[in-house]
Image 1: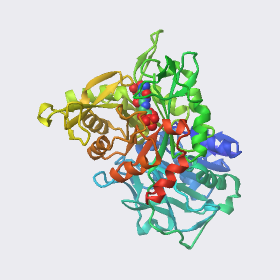
Image 2: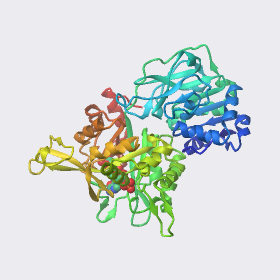
Image 3: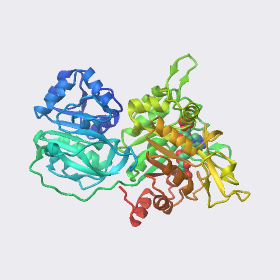
Image 4: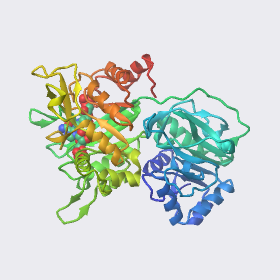
Length: 530
Ligand code: 1PR
């Protein structure tokens, strides 16, 4: 029996699902004494350091946690839980951590790195620990903006480190207490194996063995991520299907194209090595997701078998139903997180929020981006951008952020800008892609999913010019999307731009290019993959 410390600070469904998948029973901490009495305790952490510490304090869990660690009882901390074991964090100045490990949690430097660090990185193991039995240097999934610093005072706690900019602590351990910055429950089979070591071995088999016996000390490198995207909607027969359009038109001979069942397809992509899965509820702008329970069900069922990050978008906005009940965008996002999402993606509502912010120059704290970022952390908020090219003769003809293009317009125009749209590309707005992503990043978004209507479904390759323009405009990670038609297109987008990830839909659904072929082509060209 494994005890889970679910203190309501984010999505722990994935941890629960992973434990169940590995054949163990989970029970929850219900009162402070349970923290001490549990045979094996998992302490997950999602979101903001300050929020985590405040919730732990409010529930009376701080003292028993400190005692449990000091008494050397089996404990596995994940992500912010590792950070909470330190003295304090730049994320919440003045808020004390558990103070078990000497040192501070610092923020990655935005001007030199993409922050948050989102994706698959390696670890350098400094000690022998039963936790890594069977581990074979696979990359693991990290998602965080803050990191634990290495100091002489905390050297005895370091189990592994990782390089991102500099070297930071990615796992700590002493005796029967271990904590990881990475997410084993989201790190595919390698992560499940690590988790299984904690769950199934006797408490002492996982002990950290000191003194250090360093191995695998090569510098670690982030992988470029490959994301499989499933555009989902209800077809005319009322079934939820994965569909795919040509430049956003998903109908063929009047019918919505049906390319498969979302849960089965997502599982297939996981098995085939997708680094992440994204669901876009493409009619979410008109069918409110809280009334579209099948989508939540899809997410729940997918998360039972898919152990890489899941993003879901569509319909994240405020809504009042026919009974007069109001939902905030945070309510919608929370329902998605509770159903197994790791990140949510906002399309139309992000455009309205950015427009308002650019007009007033003021943050209200009330936009969907701000509210969700505040509670779940910036890394959980993706902005899905649906831009379309607008050609101009000269940059002085517009106040927009233009580029000189290698692909002139219908009248020989050599310049273009990218107009943002809402409602699945149906309505163009008075804002360009650069303005949008900058405003969203300032409001608290953690990642950009950059589509391109001109390229979507064309199989003609990514819009490198758009991607370059947006990549250089922000320091949060950018996912290139739309237009992939062959493995070489992924190589091209990673060689020609600095994006962290590339996403595709059609070629995977139609089985034109297997994921393994994409990864192989990337490896052949010296690109880091998982
Ligand atoms: O506005 O917050 O409700 O979110 C709606 C979401 O649905 C947005 O993220 C928007 O991009 C998406 N969406 C709406 N209509 C469509 C459509 O296709 N008719 N899908 C749509 C956009 C873009 C990608 C696509 C890539 C790769 N699809 O998801 O999968 O372009 O395609 P490819 O590799 O086949 O070229 P809201």
